[in-house]
Amino acid sequence: MSVDNFKTNIYEYLETLPTLTFLRLFEKPATCLAIFRLLPSIGRQIVMSFLYVETDIQIQDVNNWVNKDGEKMLPEALHKLARLRILNHQNNILIMNETFRKEFRNALTGGGAQQSFGLPCTTPDKHSVDIPFLDQYATQQWESILHYMVGTSSSKKPSRGVLNLLQRSQLMQPSSSDNADGLQITNKGFQFLLQDVNTQVWAFLLQYLNMAEVLQMDLVEVLNFLFQLGSLELGENYSVETLTQTQQQMLEDLRDYGIVYQRKRGSRRYYPTRLATTLTSGNMAIAGAALKNVTAGDTSKPATVNGATGATAATGADEESEQGFIILETNYRIYAYTESPLQIAVLNLFVQLQSRFRNMVAGVITRDSVRNALIKGITARQMISYLETHAHPQMKKKTPILPLTVVDQIQLWEMERCRLKSHEAYLYHEFNMQADFDAAEKHARDIDVLLWSNPKKRTMVIAHGGHDQVKGFVKRRLQNPSRG
Image 1 (cartoon, rainbow, N blue to C red):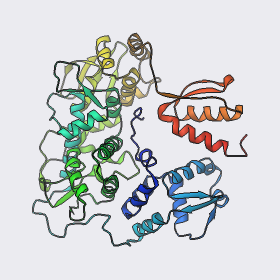
Image 2 (image 1 turned 180 degrees about the horizontal axis):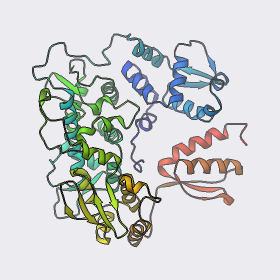
Image 3 (image 1 turned 30 degrees about the horizontal axis):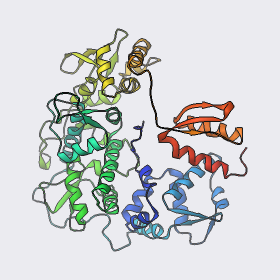
């Protein structure tokens, strides 16, 4: 899932950067490696095929490298490599960026003089911490933000920087209640909660990048440090000596997010947490799965150094959370087998909770509870999606997963309040050939950005967030003389 008009993918952000910025980014081997790891599989294969070939390569030669299954993915992969300035297309010849080629080779072979992969501390840390402690710390810091978003009463209020970021990113907005200082979750905020941990972290960091530009921080230094963190070793401590002034300032913000750990402000060493080391892993599930022993339990227990206690939690509750923990009945009664304060707080956004037991909460979905969620901008589709995602295994054996009576009623309650919706969108029309329109319409439908279409008039409306993808598809198709 993706948040409307809210980028959660670092690639979407990178492709908007100017060429000069890429040239500076490519000067760091760690950044080249990170961007390579973010590429799709076929894109990585193309880069490796080009890396040690000094002569020009014809596009036709590249077409011969792939089988029939890869032919469909090749144009999109080449397009991405071009948007990332890794490959340049000139007169049917593909040329690799020389700066990227040189520094990516250094990343693979250990060459180059710069400490772009961090400088491990050579002196022992008197207050050393272990991996379980770092996992516990990262979970406490990150979940404190999520708890605040859903309004958990016992949650610690995040720092001012985090609050500013939540509001600037429109994940939260000023509360309409009498509490003028409070914030409440928005539609985007609820959709944000449905993402996996890695996607959430990148979405947050991308907003941080936008704010960094406003604060006139060096964007290249910020990006280089984020990519560097993704290549560091979990449990190792690194010196701040090789960091620029901008990057040292970033450490304070990244501590608030749980991405790095420092014992105190101004410390000359820092530890990357698992949230940092999985930033460019290419697997969105790694961070969440690796932290599973702490995310499902009560993270309010104090973490300790040297692994004394701290990073152990109720794995049974976590397994239920991973497999699904919600049972919904046709009478709108809901039973959630979880002890996670965060999951209970999310449910409380649109469910009237009535009873709480040691490992279960019970409640009912009512018109008022759904309307309260709708007022906050949470949609019926998001509520239904959350219930389906976290449905108990017994529920998932059924088809459909949720009782249709409840699903239909939630949608009807939304229709009572939202009879008319407005969307930012783009109108596509005046296609010269029906085949071009049909292909573009199919592509838009496949990526779920088609809002409306009229094949007879060769006209369609595309969601704002999908405009660049559809525009690129149409442009590439029109440039293909063999289209049919």
